Image (cartoon, rainbow, N blue to C red; front, side, top):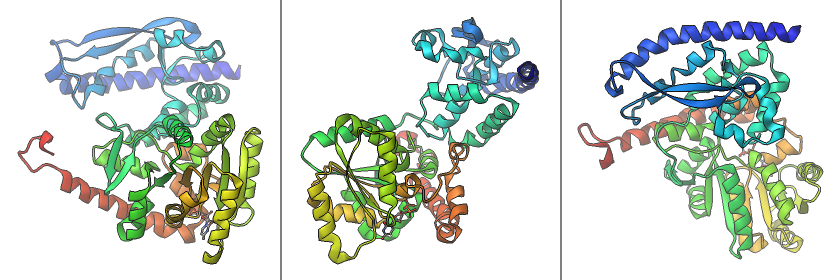
Length: 426
Ligand code: UDP
């Protein structure tokens, strides 16, 4: 009964919303797309998609003379017709083409229990570039939790997440932001790159850079040098994504150490490589190791040590890591200390991959809870960190975020072509 009421209300809301949006979208498309329309009336192309109960339906899109236009997304307005016709919904698992649906595993076909939708949790995660659930897992979660409240909250978050879109242009493999050379990889590629580096003999240093790090690099030449010297520097956090967007250098994924950690543990458990955890307050690295061991019983932990020791103990710490036979060394001592430490000592430790991971152990060791998923999905993890430790974080976020945006705005202005110049002369 409850389900029936939900279904009926949802269908009513879909219908009303789609009709209202059509009333806006049709005249808007007529005006905005007029220069690229192929005739007086829109010409539509259909793709066969799979809807509720596995039933096929035609999803239409307007054909344009030039797809390069910034407004090309408006050509998708006929999707609203599919909602009116009852084939799709505003919220639901992503609409799949017949071809995509054919490749689904049998276990993932539950998603056809509901109408597919324009936005879903997966959409949100892609938007915020959080990528730790597979699409199938995100769909299963939606199926379990679906209710009017869930749908409304997804819609609301979708509106908030709009500015974090992929932006224009195709991401490049390497992008420069604020003078820092960033490797623009997806999370899976990064894990694969780490495994590949473990097969070589050279040592590879990896650093994650978020807006706070960019601010530090601007005033700290030693840190700047450590980043320039690091083999890979990856963009971390929603701020870097926004910067990439402002500068027209799209960032592919929010690649922070915290999201990397479980992926890396899984991969190291499979390859049999040893992991050493160095950093954080006494007991926290050990608690992190216990968490990892519980999640991935095959994982080999080479050792742990807290991140507070005197300079004269440094050699002993290095010797202990060396003796442990660690392959991968995670250093959680904050920025810039951890990156400077790795720069000085990674080779001496014998580990082939060293990664600076900031507050990672505090999260996994249970000292500080991580922001809830919904807040991370809308790019608000920093708000949570600010509320948790206002005295330590206010300067970093309240002042730092503006300093960072100001820096990026200046870079944008400096990079903009002078009036009258063509874009390719940039
Ligand atoms: N830390 C450490 N040794 C020090 C100073 C800090 O091990 O001398 C640890 C600290 O306990 C925390 C981490 O380094 O676990 C830094 O956390 P923070 O939240 O500042 O990381 P970030 O925000 O830089 O990623």
